[in-house]
Structures are given as structure tokens and as C-alpha cells.
Amino acid sequence: MYPEIDTPALVIDLDVVRANVSEMAKVASANGVRLRPHVKTHKMPELARMQLEAGASGITCAKLGEAEVMAQAGIDDILLAFPIWGRPKLRRLAALRERARVRVSLDSPEVAADLGRLGGPPVEVLVEVDTGQHRLGRPPGRPSADLVAEIAAIPGVEVVGLLTLAGHAYHSRTPAELAEAARREGEDLVETAEMCARDGISLREISVGSTPTARHVAGVAGVTEIRPGTYIFNDTAMMRLGVATEESTAARILTTVIGRPMPERVVCDAGTKCLTSDGYGTPGWIRAVGLPYLRMEFLNEEHGVAHLEPGHHAELPVGSRMGLIPSHACSVVNLFDIAYGVEDGEVITELSVAARGAVR
Ligand SMILES: Cc1ncc(COP(=O)(O)O)c(C=O)c1O
Image 1: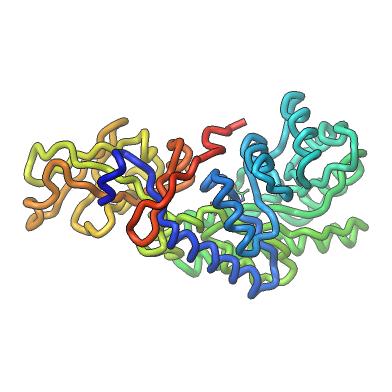
Image 2 (image 1 turned 90 degrees about the horizontal axis):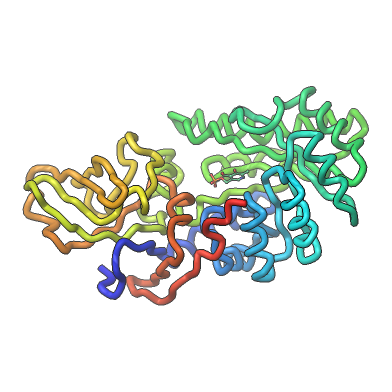
């Protein structure tokens, strides 16, 4: 398996990436909503460009640093789905606004007032609503409508819409629970926007959607854009939720077996510094492609320790290679400087994970 690549390494199947990008673009166009993929998953301008060429209307970033890398690569329509606070960041935001249309999401009048002092055209903001994740945002309905009114009165900002992430949907136990979280994600925002309209504030953007919820929430009347990110690579968390299969996962950690101390024990050269601890303890949190009888037991920083079922103890001698599907693709990609792009089983390119580590 890819003898030219030293391990551990991040390998991306570009055929699968293209299929995933195209499928989500079709979901958006079939439902008449815009697609604004979250690029925190891949952090690579080349892949953002691929998403835009397939029909995305712009991109979503979490951090200014990611947005700067994407703007440097010529991407000019960016939603920063994160409150921007403090002088150093505001200076950078002002510079970014010279090169791209930038919208910012927030949930406090304090952040809005700071943005309002930037100067230039009003900063377009989306007010974040809590549809069940209990991270940022006030509850839908009156609490959020009142917040919108308060922020709309602040000079220098224009409230253009509402935004939410139904992050609690990642913990759904059944497809019905997932579909219900997605429906609420959309309907809560649409109803809140209707309340704002009755208060005299008309909003034009209803921005929702994660990878698990996007396919459901895109169909809720009134939704204008979806922001899935993980879908480009998928991972075992998405497989567990039933929105991906092994075939639709595109990111692998290529690893080498470096020890076989016991017949049933396989030790490889990828630990938490390649795979993170995300998902640890969940059955199937890390899977080895084509090896259903191998169960990852635990990771140390540099070692992955797996168990082989009886009947397979003669397999995977020292020096064998495996492709591991991570539990959480986004945080894994952020650990690598480069990714090897493969097509048809051949390495064809090296991609720079250009916005890796851009946490500010
Ligand atoms: C604000 C926001 N939008 C969109 C997404 C994309 O969700 P997913 O990674 O499930 O595709 C995230 C994920 O963290 C997010 O925080």
C-alpha cells in the first residue's frame, strides 16, 4: 500500500472527495439552497476551490487565520462562523475585508459593538441561535428575536440573518432522532426570523446545517444556506450516524505495523499525535480499511494498539501497512503539514494543509 510514502501519513482519496463534493452540491441545488461548505475539515485551498467549482456559493471558516489563507488563494466570499473579538483580530478582519466579502456570526451585543467600530461599510452579521447544542446562542423565538433587535440597533453592523449548528445531532441514537434534530434546526430559525419580521426587522439569510443534518434541513422551507464540512472526507463518527459508509470516507492515516508482541496484538506507528483522542471508547472509533476483524484498543502518543480476532493471528506481520479511518477527520487533518492525494490507487499529488494550525 503506497510504498513510496513513509508512515504515518495522511492520505486523501480524491475520487471519493470528488464524489462527496458533487453529492452535497446536488443536495443543495435540488432543495434550492446555497451550499457554503465549512473548510475547517480540509484546510486546503485546492479543495475549497473544488467545492466552489462544483457549485458552492462561498465558504465557511471558523478562524480568521483559515480565512486569511483562503483569501490569499483568491477565495472572496467567506463566512466567519465565530465571534471575532479584540484589537489584533479586528485589524486583521479590516484587512481581510479589503480582499473578500466577509460575514461574521456572533451572539452578543458586545462583539457586535466592537465590529461596528471597524469603519467602512457596515459589517454583515448573522446572529447565532441555540437550537439544542447549548454552545453559543440564545434559545429560538423571543430570546433570540430580542437579541436580534438589540444588535440591529448597533451602528456599523447589519444583521443579515440567523445561524445555528445543531451540534447535538451528532449524538443522535436513531435516524429518526437525527431527522427530528435537523427539522428543528431549520424550523426554529425560520420561526425566529418570522418573529423578527413582525418586530420590523427583515432577515434574508437562514444558515444551518452540519454533515449529519444537511440532507434533512436543506428541505425545510425558508432555509437559504447549508454549511456542512465533514462530508468532504467523512469519518467513523459519520458512519455511526448512518450518513457515510467505508466507501464514502476519503481520509486515511497510512500506518505501518511496528510490533507483533503477542499473536493477537498488532502495534502500529500511529497514535494520538496522528489520530487524536476524539471518539475514544466508542465502538468502531478507528477502523482499518478492509480489516473488520481488527479492533483498535487504545492509542498512546506514537503507538496504536489493536486486537486481532482468532483465525487472523497469522496476518499483519511487522512491516505490513494499514489505512485507518479516523473518528474525527477535521481534527486529524489539522495534525499534518501535507496530505498525499491518491486517485485510482496511485499517489498523484501532495496537498499542503495550508491552514493547518490556524487557530487564531
Ligand atoms: C458553525 C459550524 N458550521 C458548520 C459546521 C460543519 O459541521 P460538520 O463538521 O458536521 O460538517 C460546524 C462544525 O463544527 C460548525 O461549527
